[in-house]
Image (cartoon, rainbow, N blue to C red; front, side):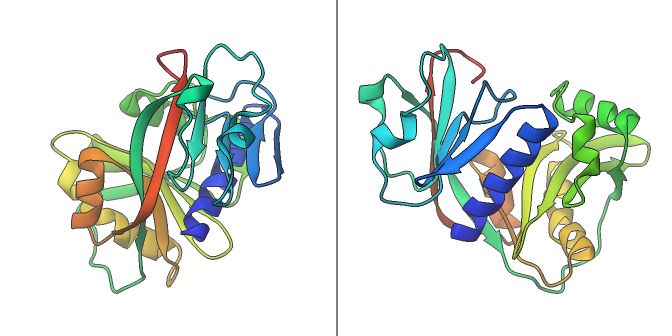
Length: 225
């Protein structure tokens, strides 16, 4: 599970770099210096056994913020936070994954990024700095000429992180069914990790991922944080 947490920390750092948001790590906490990009945390735990006050310390008077308890072990209600959702860390070991049903392409520039952002309804997320990160693979899946999904793969030392999976209703089964083979084609023999909840977790398990632990996101103020 530590490898999944570490990969997620590195991915969040890459996104923040691309958006010009400084980050620090110390005393078991990853923290942003200013408000992070939408849907990304202001702080997260790097190891278990920390206190609630340690996690929220340093957030100051930010009117809206979100924190990620990577081991889902803290209660932050006394600090004014409410639980946003609880997800599962997931992991899939390398195997001889089958071929893909869809056509997958790598997005390597702003025009393709705009297509992906529009399809995923996440405008402005993919800043140019991400394309210079060699560990980042931004992907689109098409059925014929129609975009039916996408994902981001992020390589760290020992694992590949899967995140930002999106699908159309019609493409959901095919996208999730393809992802293990897509990841193995890009990084043969490397385990794939991530975190999912709800129906996406169900589809991940159906695609051969195992739930290996829980993570909880807490929010204070604001609907989009």
